[in-house]
Length: 431
Image (tube, rainbow, N blue to C red):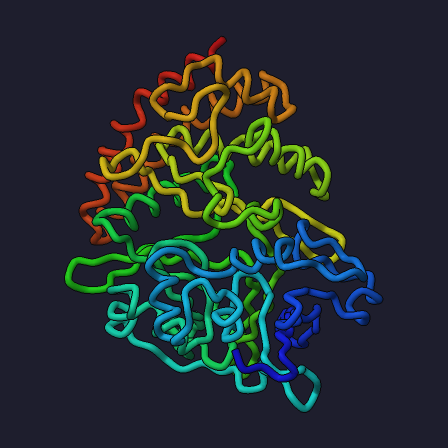
């Protein structure tokens, strides 16, 4: 990989300035924090798995974090093909990335005032026809990502865009170029109804005490829909002259925090994933009790709606200065509605990993693993069992009235699928 001095620079770009976090020596395969970054003492580490220190990190230590910044599956293979590199050459793929999750970026050239990789950041309008085409396949998604120098994690077709109101107050979609920041992620499902179902769950969860990003449905044409998710790692301001100013926020997913490769995101941690994550939050969160309670609510929500894709990369931490907190919940899809998806949960509940085998006693064990009282978990279960089905039904009817008629039927199917798990959770809650 051609780089200046055979190095790859790691940056953090919040919006107004670029910080050089460190560099990777491509000959020795070592990552080292820069001395000015270490001397600042107000900046967070790249990851909890890469704590601030003067000694360099070996590749085995830093690779899981960097791999976690890249897309997975077919989208990764398509991106590698577009770049004409091997799909296991993660550094070559990242060297093109100025817009990752959080505020991390990469440069093949040293960064100073005369050489700012974000100096050409800009936006251009994009129409829905082009968005629809870009979300139609892995190859098209990879090409759109290359154009924006964008790297989005996960396995669904995703596209990062920015949205800004025009002079009449209508929303205008913009394509980020040259490292400009996206403000929203648009996702199309590889199976029909996935965007609609994810929308129903996410929008309803926000009314049931679960912190989630804002979501909406976007019509792509020809009956296709995409879910539009407002990025929680972005803060957006519209300046007086109408330009968009976006501040990036530092984040990492829990697989990165724990030094785990994306391919092992479904692995159950020791002694359990729930216990290990609660331990992580207790040691690193600025408000551990609040975040552990939030984790408990997310885990019950995933169980109730049938989201078996609740793996380590679908939970994240936000870092700002000395503060660390659990990020809003995201990518909550009721997978049990689809026969093609496994019913093995990404995180075990109590003694059971198969969602249909969970019994009320498993939630007693879950409370113990999280280090919270059984009564607190029971109260949370009662709240979700009472509010969530009603919220899903109301949202389905509301969307049907706005033109998305299928959502009323999707809501009915989702609520019916939830009934056996709701009965199990209510049995625990009423003890």
